[in-house]
Image (cartoon, rainbow, N blue to C red; front, side, top):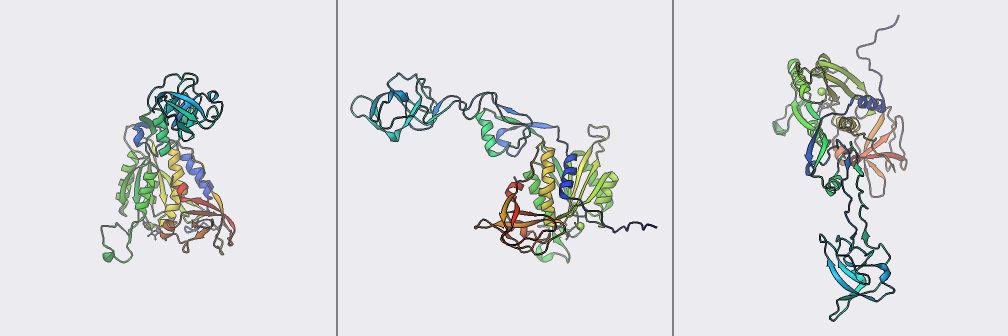
Length: 427
Ligand code: AMP
Ligand code: MG
């Protein structure tokens, strides 16, 4: 006779890699796009290839203040050439007569016929009434000349669809004359916190907090993280722990959002209303991910009920993060971030890991893959934050990244470990 599974039996653990594959397979890129001013496009994702209609720079130009000439006209150091024109940046040049030179400034177009620039430090002006210059150094053809098109060729795909725009890419787009860019719509995310213990800072003074009450910290970093990922956030605050209120909040959020993100209440066996409500309105998978911090994680979907509207029959994604602040933070970076990038059509590569020596020891191996909060030190190694508890948010502020430590692995001082910087995870 087989014993029926206990209701408290834990579901099998899923690997982080499998969870990511499953999650990404559900993240179909959003179709809608919009046109935004290039000024406002930092962090946005290109909806179409950027093809250059011109070459950059448009003409050969000088990269120095000095004299433009034909290199072949200087037979040896000290050669004197008459100066026949003066070319400033933004002004057109006349063709250069053989055996003469042109006073030229950085960014000014090269005159036709000239093939090199001698920087002014390598010249001496000739006195008297002939306007000329001693060229002290024999120039090489091409010296101090920026070639037309050396940055961008006409017709080149400068940035491909799906590229996330950085400050440098905005400059590059502007150099092609683009004042507006077509970008993928921002994912619309509804954010809820769950937990009767939660209190908002500003609503209750620290000295007036009831026993067991804590401030809602997840809401603050999750909202900030979502914004960094280019999302439009509807922060629905703390959803009251009541069935009807939860159902109503989920239903109305589903119609107008691409993702509902919650924190808390996804642990096994927890009494709360989010899980049954999501199940009632769609589907929910509770995953126990073999990672520390951050084991409980939920992915599901909520049906859109917009009557006969365009969204009828579609689904809004649902992701439930663990409540422990560090678990919530780390699972956001490792799972929600790639999900949001994929929603925006970015084929996000796995975060770059570098190998660095541990300047700490980890005597007790965990059964789960562990993400340790560490900081790079001045000797090129990693220090470990002393308290790695998933409730200790100080560790995430102190650290500048995570060590990705395989399951069942102890670390001795000096061992090479895999480090992922927050700078890469927050980019
Ligand atoms: P839960 O995942 O709901 O079981 O919560 C796990 C732990 O995280 C509990 O100690 C909660 O009090 C705490 N927690 C849940 N949500 C938040 C939040 N928004 N801010 C700070 N702590 C939280
Ligand atoms: Mg809770």
